[in-house]
Length: 305
Ligand SMILES: [Zn+2]
Image (cartoon, rainbow, N blue to C red; front, side, top):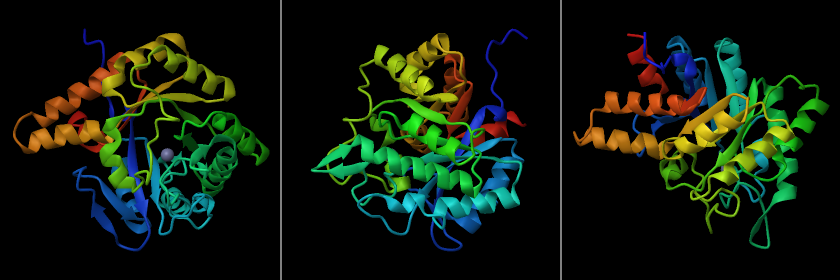
């Protein structure tokens, strides 16, 4: 009765990694319990997620081929586009969100177009807008741009509106920090940059006020939900964003945050279930309405007991 914060499977978005081929289900070694799956398997997985009471998934793609510009991201026959169609067909009640970024599709692993060794902001926007439209045409309910290029929310909003998708919301990765905790994800999405790092377009972990500036810009451009990423080491940012803005706030409990608990639990150094619930509760207590987490299924099983 007096507990101030309660968790529910309703709070979660579960990330899924879709790859090419058939009957592929390859566990990600640094993220036990998470898999790269072909479309046929990802559909089964999506069914399981939905049956646990989790309302939404976010899809990441691992394409068969990568190129300099990441053009595969916009292919109507791409892995993500195929997965969206298959999931909407077999699990129509599940809300499908897609990650919109180029880093899984570029041969160099950066989130944008490279010119003279640098990531170029403006040429990237055009490709991100095409990618978002192709996801929505395939049936995605919401798109989530994760690249942190300036102006990408507006570019995607304009492109969606022009194609007749004015009602499709955008969840922006509004305050995304250059974090060491993304390490395991890069194995999962095969998106490690081949040179340099992402610090020119992701935020400095030392900056707090800058997050509010970034979030305000995304809201001005038309974001419907704003996200803070990572979550555990940025609870103050989640709280600031919650206090300052009225939009729903999402927080991404990222791969490294998941993997450290999994690893410590395997060594018998931590009580996994308690640690998981404590982390998720603290993210919600800080002000997140929505939590993207690899723990979603396990947490839902506990909460459904
Ligand atoms: Zn990216």
